[in-house]
Length: 116
Image (cartoon, rainbow, N blue to C red; front, side, top):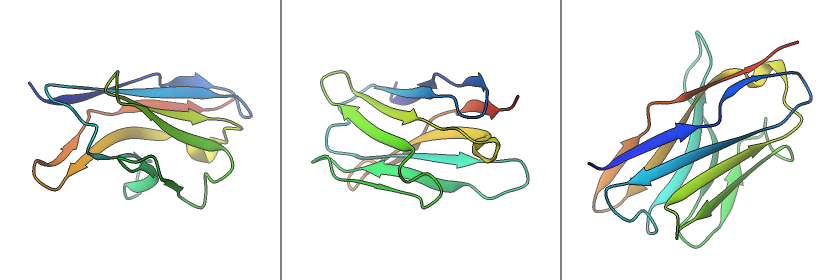
């Protein structure tokens, strides 16, 4: 079964850090564009960060300088290191894979809550 499974979410205080993981299975994702999105209650899903198959990255303006996306193709896993977390980072975070031949795949999401 081809799937993406996110993990690493939870409750953290403002200023804290979390690392999210997205484990891909069922095929190789080394050629895919991998991304993290998030959706807060009552808001549209927004792009947080993406990483290309050759390692180029880009970030949403609200997370630049605080979040880092990376990938380990040997482990078929993508990571999102989140530092200096703010209450407004609270959302469900989704992993996404885009492949020109295989289409788009979403994970089930992991909840991140930033609160004191």
